[in-house]
Image 1 (cartoon, helix red, strand yellow):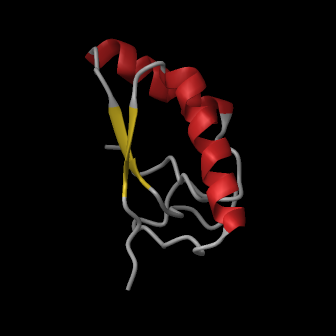
Image 2 (spheres, rainbow, N blue to C red):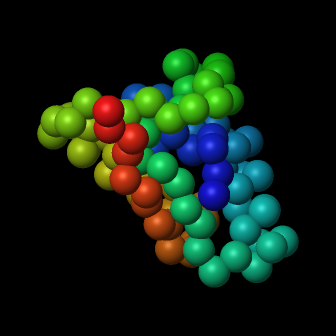
Length: 88
């Protein structure tokens, strides 16, 4: 799975990232993609922290993740498997 989609981040995915994702799905003929439910970047300029931070467990996070998933699925056009967030 990817480590760049940051499904719980408050920042939108860049057009470049989404375009690359769609291209890789097409080239690999992937039947689905997967990603963690979590925060992988600290701002809209950072690609990845290299590890997953858990989102806050509240309604705002649920709504943010739902927007993010819809954004990803618009370009992916394949199912998106979401992995549980890391919670310590």
